[in-house]
Image (cartoon, rainbow, N blue to C red; front, top):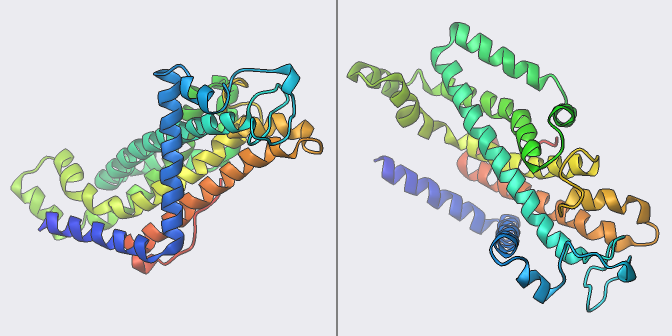
Length: 302
């Protein structure tokens, strides 16, 4: 019965996406973005940037004689203030955004689900302590909290992931707690207790599968927000290292050249906008398929 329900849910999601042209476009763009991120990771860590150098130019190589050149056959998206290929750096920046976003949001979802499940299942003092701790984190604007954490941790990809994880864990904890609270009073939970299932098994095997709808939708929207967060932190100079290709860092470096080199800021900015928009429209379609009564209202912004 569970297998059939699971298959039916997948079919419903697939039909919803196939019936929604915007969701199809969003899904295709996201698939392309992930493909580009995988390509750049394989090329850098396994092939020592040989592929990107053969196709375009080394994204890390500077060339003072090619500074701020406009789009051309050799440089399809122009060059930056150090003569680096903008298109090559946009491609490699995709890996940074996707890696940070997926890693941070996945980690936040795991911790958030754990906190939400435990506080909802046991209630009383456990619920009060856990939720008040989440309220403390939610009391701060997300971007300001991330900046404060990075001021303590220092810049770098690992620290950006940690900061974004801490910022988004309370959101998943709230969503998970709400779902677990609504499910734990159902008869199948009482039956599991009568049979003698331990609490851990009840939470993981019985409750969690029935609480994944809202969590899955929140995961999709949070990926878009995490990409914006990483770009914002890098733009403000507290994110990744300046030499690391990152869309936000490229925008930060392009601020002084916007009037004389429009391509320097345009292409990384468009990359952020298209990627975030694609995640949002796909998230809307998933929400309509998984929770039709919820309706569509878009995702929140950081």
